[in-house]
Length: 155
Image (cartoon, rainbow, N blue to C red; front, side):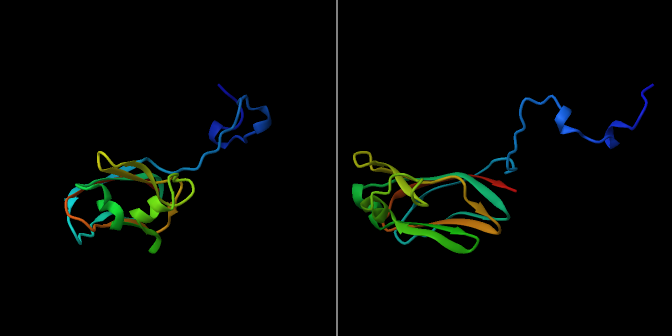
């Protein structure tokens, strides 16, 4: 029979532990996927995602496929974080400003195929929210096929 204190009440001495390394990670929670997909028309302003709670964004990407090459120009992607609009730029602004890397701005055009009339906008990972997150799209042209994916975690 073992002598001394039970294991659950024994003091821990990290100096004598045989761990090769200690890894500290933020607890972000299990990833969840929110999706939106629809054909939208002129003046439509669908809410793509509206989530309440405390959480973390792993990534977000918007795909737009239009009938004409320049139809996306007046469309606007809105991104609210905790009730404050963080991003609300036309896709034409993103393109004209040369924002092609999501690491330099809250949203960037990461793909533009003028032949296939395909556009992708990416929101980079790392944003945290304490109350809510919301994405909305303002459509300026009819017949836009829109798909939106948000991978996030509720903490």
